[in-house]
Image (cartoon, rainbow, N blue to C red; front, side, top):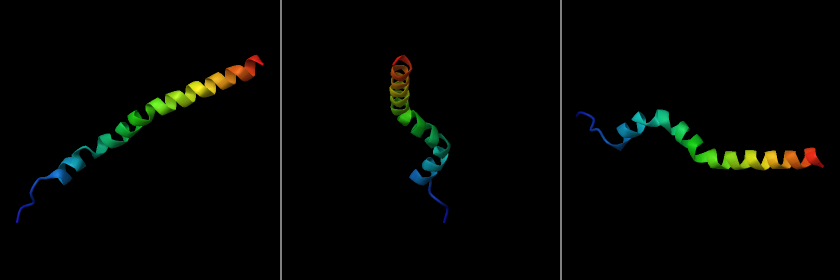
Length: 47
């Protein structure tokens, strides 16, 4: 009996792109944390 193509085959084809999608999803949080860290560092440097 031949294997039928289905969602499992589609998922294995896009498995290589999944980590990049995860990083793109986390990017706004990382940018916000970097900005907050920069602001705190600037306040410490100016005090």
